[in-house]
Length: 410
Image (cartoon, rainbow, N blue to C red; front, side, top):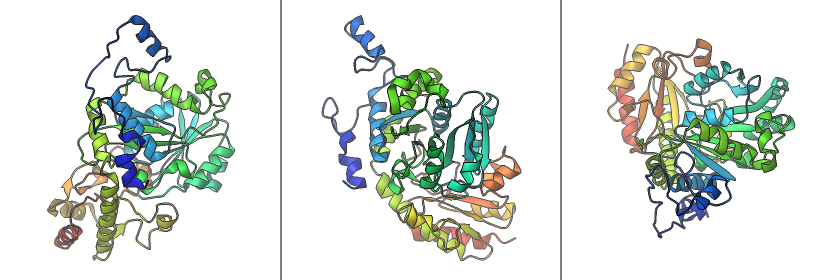
């Protein structure tokens, strides 16, 4: 099956208990059993079933199974937010004294998380270049994971997944990839060599801007050396699934970062149209970026522009798509604000991946607490405007942005 058919007719879109067309919302805290023996077996993982929504729920499981199928993984775990997913995944493999290698230019919230992990004794080594050659010299015996965004936001750096995976695997280290801005419609990182894929489901997977969530997908192929990854030593018997078992029965369960059943349902039905939305969004973003790039005083940043330093990856890795994020430099913060405030259709909001076009000035919002070096690495400057392109008629978007730019004369 191709992408849209798989979404609607795949293995995880059927088989509900009462023949429902969609997974029912199991909005409960706990599940009742007829005997204590039955419940004991569920707690001991000797019998299938649910006991308490913080550690498992059928609605949440339906969404986990759907994204796992789309990404081609061996198992997935939903979290309360994208940040909860990132934190849980990293804490499942890292202990005090360990190191993470991460790409510079990460989402501002992720940078903040990595700074917080420093207080727990987990150090991060940042690098501008995530190629195989540049990663190898950075890896030490303390390195436990390489973490990167597949398409960074808003700098739009593209991770060469295969090269980064090769460098990681030669040293016995997993590659964790945040694929929020790419989505499985554009690329499936596990098929290129990544070991763990993370999404903020609040963005493109949901699409409607109506619920917060995150998800971690385990490829199930990485050979965990519990002598090196000592955080997993108690889970050695689970082999390639050691990470998922440790994550679900330890870090995720104990920290309590579960997704709410209603949010799982909203995310599930949102993904029904993921392929249609992403195709339209990418086409709109491409046309809008080319229109903006031709305007006086505007320096547009989008992957399909021939001048973009990562342009070649559009065909080599991203299946011909540039994603839904573009940015441009307006010349000054004042002009950037004037442009944003003059837009009729683009909404001023901090989310991405919505059906609607969203716009923001990241330097004064998302990267307010970041250092100058961190903001520059993220492609954020005082005059940067970030646009999350929606599904509106593209001619209306082009006209709206063109009028706003031309009207914002300093």
